[in-house]
Amino acid sequence: MDSLVIEGGNRLRGSIHINGSKNATLPIMAAALLADGPSLIKGAPHLADISSLINILLELGMTCERLPNGDLALEVTDTKPCHARYDLMRRMRAGICVLGPLLARRKYARVSMPGGCAIGDRPVDIHLRGLRALGAHVELEAGDIVVRADKLVGTEIFLGGNFGSTVTGTANVMSAATLAEGTTVIESAACEPEVVDLANYLNAMGAKITGAGSPRVIIEGVKALTGVPHTVIPDRIEAGTFMIAAAITNGEVQLDNCRFDHLMAAIDKLRSIGIIVERSGNGCTVASARRLEPTSITTQPHPGFPTDLQAQFMALLSLADGNSIITEKIYPDRFLHVAELARLGANLHKEGSTVVIARTKRLIGAPVMASDLRASAALVLAGMAASGTTTVMRVYHIDRGYEKIELRLNSLGAKIKRVDQKELEL
Ligand code: EPZ
Image (cartoon, rainbow, N blue to C red; front, side, top):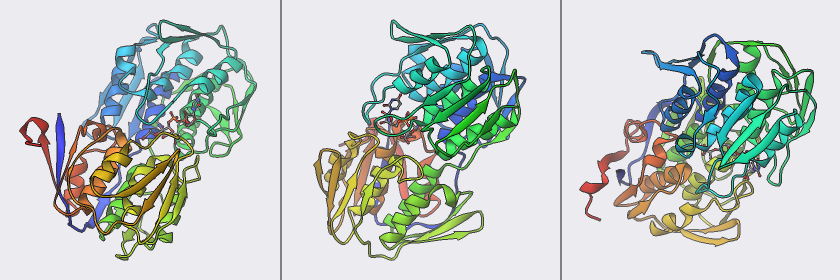
């Protein structure tokens, strides 16, 4: 098992290319199950989560080939296998995105119910509510969700929940509705850019979807979809993470291939605390003003402040000149990074789903433990700002969502080594 050993105190400088979006690629790969003929996914990042989904799709009768230029060639060659097994699904929750496409194309699917997650309770009741509304019969058998339907029929579906809309739930229901009879109207659909990217891919294959990116999405069912080439959007959470990396190290970084319009809430907060963020070329530049103002943040569904940048921003605000407040509204328990950041000297007070971040003069390097993808990114950012050495353990979490993160940060001037944990005397 690998760890990252970080020598802190190095300012980041230079330019970085933002990779394709993990959270756009995953539902798009699953939606290729709907298609006749090959699809070519361009810009699909090289990540553990993508490989996990490839393993699931291979067992569902799809060929998946990573071409020398990095493109992902996907094609259904066998429509009989319909079981996404626990052993594969437990590695990656987003595997649930195969449920809607399998049901719509094969009228039957058996998908292991996703289990517990470090960031909190993550039920799929709304996904099932949507598929039932389209006419699916839904059962739970031995930990598997079993859905079947002779045919799917378009209807009006409300997909809102206690924490707002659901991103992969919208992906599942929207994908299934493309092959339903008649028209489906989804109310309270998720508005995330990843949902829009999926709708663009589905429409390019012959679907009739309007309103993606707004809470009201209309899908007119069609008979069939044909595979196409598609380039995924840049990863806005990776971009946000690199923006915060520049800010927390008092650096100056150019981000290439970054969609400014996908990150307005985060950019607004960076600017409000004194970070200079400007559009440039096909991305933006981020420069730190050395003195950080405090602020308050509440995570919300898009276009609000993304929960997937909450931990990284907490690391940054731990160095602000005053008290900040972060309230987590999407995953109220998403705070496993709090205790680890405190080990680096951050002054954090958690009350329910709110954390008060009091000013600390500086962070000091220490061994810390990653617990989930974005928490591990926050620990790496804090380690770069801390004096001395920080060792982040269990970095397999970070490899799920960031490609070769230490090499890319080192290309900007960081000093990070990946080592096998066994070599460490801690
Ligand atoms: C997507 O997860 C992302 N994952 C998550 O990113 C992200 O944190 C999340 O959206 C919110 O932005 C992918 O796209 C693969 P939700 P998803 O369904 O779709 C509740 C990362 O770090 N809910 O929008 O699983 C749920 O518990 C990952 O890359 C229900 O109650 O999230 C949560 O509180 C982590 N019932 C809220 O809704 C349901 O049926 C939003 O969840 C579904 C969701």
